[in-house]
Amino acid sequence: MVERDVEREYSVGDFAAKLRRLADALEAGKPFRIQIAGERFTVPKNAQVSVEHERGDDEEEVEFQVKWSLADAGEEPEDDSEV
View (cartoon, one colour):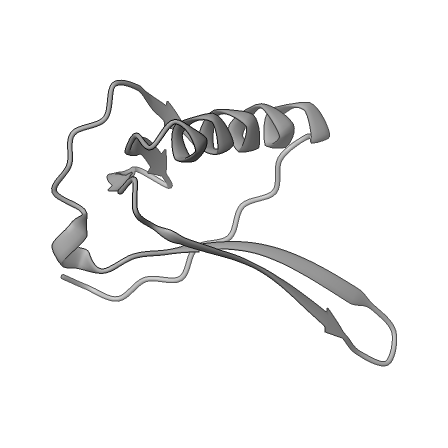
């Protein structure tokens, strides 16, 4: 598998809708299928979640992170979305 680092900006409404779907799936203990920049993948139900805060000289950043082992990504979800 090739390494990749993709970032995309969304409207507040689109971002909130995607977060809601992900949060609902995680809370229900279900995997979540999503597509980002043409690549579709599954976030497994046992993914680890964290919130990161960074502060620099002229800006601050909050990152909502979802991490999992590739070995856990084989689950099939009920839904998917383009991000």
